[in-house]
Image (cartoon, rainbow over all chains, first blue to last red; front, top):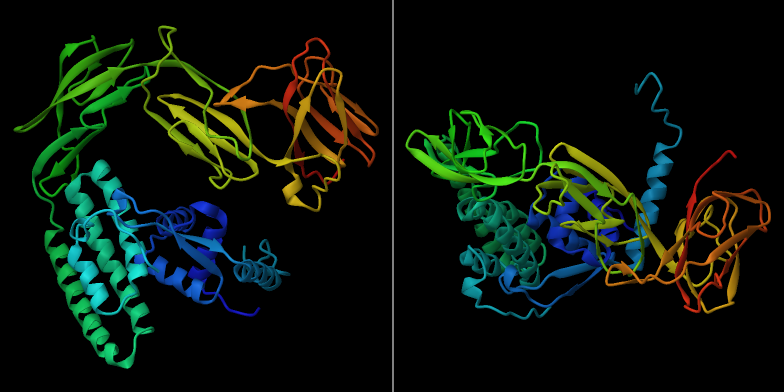
Length: 109
Length: 395
């Protein structure tokens, strides 16, 4: 794995991948809240996305400003090749560390 | 990142000082714009839903929750001269947070009832014949919800609706009534719109080719009087919103796959499947076992009279269905093709004229489907042949 991903970074990167062209801060925040039950602050989401962008895992662009956003634009995110590779690495890594664990075994039952 | 504006900055959110403070401590302007834009967007939605006071409180709380993240992010990016300013800002943030929490703690004590609100803006739609409790909220002056401690109801005018003093309403037939709700000195008039349903007729399968425009859920809501009902209080959910999302009762396809929709109105409920197919030029060479993107595909069919096309089919269990071309959400109404399968394949129902959906088991390679113009008309066959492959390990 070339770059490590924190838990929130991984969740945010997955949300960006899942949401496709609808991926912007608010939709990502709602997606994470629906899937994890955790209500992350807007600041936490954007600083996480900024870290992902610094790592080259997501790219962003802004849309046209809208009155409902107080004249501000949406900042849309897309997963880059580096991000896609990081997701594959994370999935492989998770599968590797989980392999051999028997969830029905007496230790985990 | 340069971000354009369409309104004056001072009017761009409930807390204009928040942006100035963030800029002063060196938070990136693009980051502030994106974050505050999101806050403004959700604030607007909450104003409509919860009222301006509750929305403003939410905004302030979210801005404060975001502050440490934004400031710390800035601290990692600014030069040493600005770091001192950031440190001061963090200290100020801590003080403000403590003060805010203290105020929250003080204001946590609920006030006396100040307002009673029923349903949405004192309008309640009833879609069932069984008795139901009127959805009533008792709020204090700060908009916080209180326990419903003794709201009393009386029928005022309109349709002969049965309503108990505690708000159990029974709508046996279609009609509008006015009901008075009273709590001490508080009083409000509730518009009761009785539209009891007897059944919902909904399309079980809703198929899209990716790129299709959104479509209204094909559903018919029949009242107890046998007439259609259009005024509804419905709960609609989609299991996997990455495949399709809902905009009211409109279904918008998002990615190839299959998901399920559940719809509940009053005591009536129903479900529907939504399939989204990836457009492909041919069904030849599909490897759905190895390539998940080959599991929901639709190949375009455009056949003039006497034309036909043959495709090879993958091994496994799948359904084949002809999807007529849509325009503005409705099928164009052209002829459907004749489907014929050949090779080591078994389909039920057996493809024949009039069968547009069939479920097939291809036991080995070499199965084919022939899609042919029916010949009964000169009109062209226009649409797509969709294949929905299922993972089956033992057959």
